Length: 510
Image (cartoon, rainbow, N blue to C red):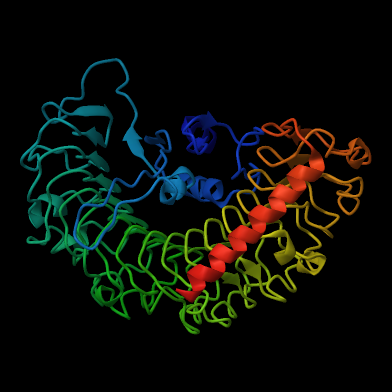
């Protein structure tokens, strides 16, 4: 049974796209945000979802979470850069199997499809009322993509064998309590209420729930007692709503010891909510309006493994250097798309993946990466880093670093003293004018070097720089080699750099 279930699963991660919009596959040599395919947490989370699937259902294509432009009050439209996350995060899509050929089930509701006993699909048939002729033995019910505005509690309570219920994309509101008296639904584990008109988390939800979809509503409140009775809850998806920090009660997640995955992205949070689940392992708070990280915001979330704070409004001054001190199990931290000017010390030392892409970084403070011997991937893409800000001492503790992405900065030289463990180096879209013979002496294990769209001229690249790289598989230097005098080009670059510095100084004075 498990083997058949796995064969029915199809997982498709969103393809990455380059700045020009052209589709590109991971590990091709044209992009700047490439990540290795192995070890992605999104994939592992998708596999975890398989364990929840009943054998009668299969996992449809796992679509990229594409957040539409936010039109509700308290939200905001996403720029192409901000939409980066929608290509990384898979979402679970449940769909019943196609009905097998043969005689129709006798008690299957009109216009619905019943593939086998207990599985009823009434999706997309323009229902305006809850079907009253459902068999009591129904255990998997799909009512998505209809016009349902109200469901009476007694209509649900008689379906005491129900295990999965999909109500996605209807017109349900919070005015009526459809789950009042839902104690009969003691087998319901999967509930999808996404894409409705809810303004708060419904009360009286079945206590047996494991996975709860509430995304893409207009939810503004999570009260103290609506989730706490659901002690079996593991996945809570609240993204793309209208939540502010004060709308989440400090005791909203109290006692939920099994809750390990929480999605709060695409809301209007102005700070990290208090009272986060103590055993949460995956926390997505990206695409909000958070301006700072306090010292105790993550003081009780000891089990966090993946934390995404990207595309908020966090500044270096408002990120406390002790904010991550308790996160000793953290493996992935994403601070991309914020307003950080300097990478300060205090980052969690045990992370394997650190993303600080598309900020305003001009410097790495002394000791910013100190003690991070377990770091495998570091992304500093799209900042304002110059060569003098990346001295050899910056990498001294990164003994396990395999991927370094510094594309889209203002580097004029190949960084010195890079870790021996490095395998992939992304330097495209900088102002690098030369590749000297000793450029890669410290990195003999390089497999990929990406130098496209720099300022390399004919004669500025020394061939011997690459001869000692026995493992090199990809060398990308497209978009360089303009015919010209190397010394003149170098002088012109120095003048441009001085002009840039003067502009920055004037901007700071204003």
